[in-house]
Length: 393
Image (cartoon, rainbow, N blue to C red; front, side):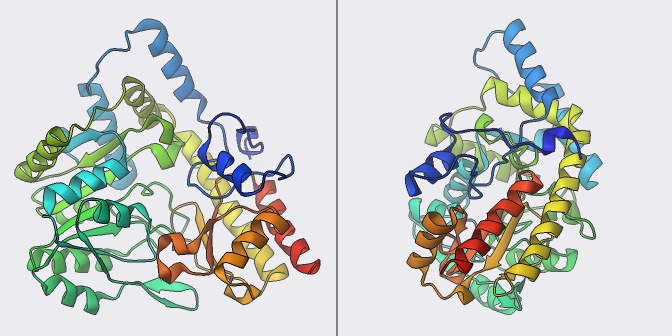
C-alpha cells in the first residue's frame, strides 16, 4: 500500500466541515480521532493535482474563466476510458457542484407543486432540492431483505403513471446503501420514466468508486446518443477528493433539454465553475488514474477489514453488501438504543462519528453510514472503540 494511503491528515482548524461537526458533537474528543461522516476522504489529494493548480496560479490570471476545449476533451476521454461511454463535447455542461445542479434540474424539468420521485433511504439533498424548490417528495422506498436492497419497480411504475409526478432523481451507484444497479434495473427505470413522461435525473457522482466483481454502467451509455428525458450528473469530487473545488460535469444529450437546463441556471443567477476547479479536474482526469487505482485497492481492503471485524466482534450489527461508493451502510438497531440514544452513545462513549441513517429518510432509522475513505488503521480504531464501549456498559 502506498504511503499516501497509510496516514490521515489532521484537518482540525482548517474549516473541514465534518471535523468542526465532530468537535461540536463532542468537544472533549480525543486527539487522533477522525470523523467518518461527510463523504470526503481522510487522505491527501493526488500530488499531480496540487502541482497543476500551483503551476496555474503562478502563470495565469485568476479571472472569469470558462471551460476550454482541452477541459471538455479530458472529461470525454475519462468517460470513454473508464466507462466505455462516448460523450459528445457539446453535451458536457460544467456546473458549480452536483447538488446545485440537482436544484437546477428540479426547477428546469418540473413545475411548482409537481411530484418528484426518489428512492429512500437516499442522499438527503435530493429531498431538500425538491422541497426547497416548491415540489413534493414522492417516495419509492427501496426494498430491504437481510441488509440487501433492490428497487420496487412495480410501485415505481404506479407512481410514474400519476400525471402529478413529472421528475425522478435516481442515485447510481446508490448512496447510502451501496448498490451498483444492474443494466436490467437501469433500463427498467428509464423505460418506466419515458413511457410516462417522467424526466429522469441520474446522480452518478460515485461512478468511479466500484468494488471488484461489479461494474457501473452510466445509464445514458445504455440508451445511446439520442437519449431523451435524461440528465446525468458527474464530478471528480468523490473520485479524487476535490469537493472544495465545487466542479461538476452535467451531461445532457438532447440539445433542447440541455438548453432548458442552462436557461434555468441563467435565470437563477448560478455562477460559473471557478478557474481552479477546471485545472484540478483536468489534471485529475488526465494524470491521476494511477492514484485512483491505488485508492480502489485501499477501498477494497477497508471494506474487507470492516466486514470481518464486525462479523467477529460486533455480530449484532448487520452490514449491507458494498458494491459501489466508499460508504458502508450498517444496521445498528440490535444495539438496543433509540435513535437519539444511539447518536449520543456513539459520540460520547465510543467517540465514533458516522452519518446517522435517519438523515437519508425514515427508512434509515437506526442505521449508520461509515465513510471508508481513510487509512485502514483508522477503520479498525473506530470499530474497536465501539466494541470497547459495548463491553464497558
